[in-house]
Amino acid sequence: MRRSEGYSLLNRFSHIYIEQKALSYPVTDRILKRFPRSVKVVVQHYKDVFNRTHQDFRRQKDSPKLILAVKQEPFLYQGPEICEDFGNKNFYYASCVLNCLYDCDYCYLQGLYASANIVIFVNIEDFFEDVQKRIEYENLYLCISYDTDLLALEGVVPYASKWIEFAGGKQNFNIELRTRSANYGAVKRFTPAEQVVLAWSLSPNEVARRYEKLAPPLETRLKAAKTAVEDGWKVRLCFEPILKIQNWQEIYSAFLKNVFEIIPADRIFDANIGLFRMNREQFKRISRFRTDTDVFAYSMVCSGEGIMSYAEGERMKDFMHRQLIRYLPGEKIYS
Ligand code: SF4
Image 1 (cartoon, rainbow, N blue to C red):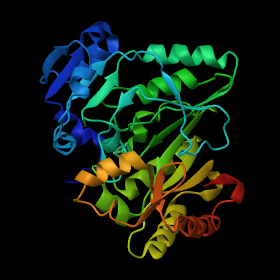
Image 2: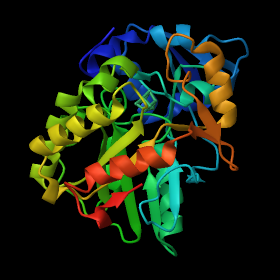
Image 3: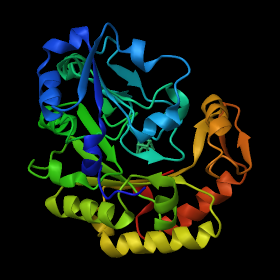
Image 4: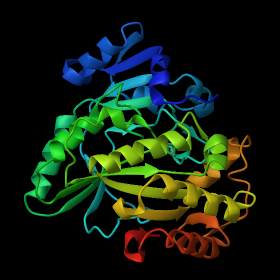
């Protein structure tokens, strides 16, 4: 199944589980009004539903439910080594939503969570309060679309907008909103903020069509990124995960050419290259049940830090760097 944008998926939540504590929050109210026909079930704790054993992640992906919950501390987590920090010192991430509307074959979330249902933490103000306390005394670089695709979910819960509003004008604070969505229209009304980087994950059509199910095609993501650049936002291009598909060199070279024919390279804030890689435990868990995709079938090696990636990873990264440097100066490329 391929749909052009997350909005077409919004009628899928046949059930909404609501944590008792979450009932009194305005975000809960808004979501319940947004889905009047969904069956509502009040639960004591969201983990009673989300962490149940013997759930079938793949089947749940076909018909995910919503779970509304109240997040307890910690609200922010230190960014893992496996992720690019783009030269920022205090790299943290916030997971105000768990799981995603899209269904990429290579997604690590299917090895991280027992359930594909989408958890929305309705107490977003508590996340903001925690950030506010920290930035009084130190810089903070925060990835807000982590363990989810926040912009794709904007029609369910407008957290991308809320974060942008919150970040605008703040000292010591920068956020990255990363997405595979083409839903730029949901945040276009804001004045571009110095503190906000809009980051698009891009893959060649050959990869997007085959491995990024439910995510919009490359053309519409490029169009969204281009409009954001023209509107004056800081736009980051994320070329990851690079997959070792057949003829990957030709495919990725042609892809980069296509990208920079559409997006003016001189107006890009920065870009990164990242090979497909994954924590060993998650990789093992996912490869046991994802026999329907060849993503996990390639020969991989495990680094000393427990990260699985391609044996010829360095060669692949060098190749991609050589291609990308044709369009962007070296200091704007992270890999
Ligand atoms: S867009 Fe990101 S979070 Fe969503 S399924 Fe794809 S890889 Fe996972």
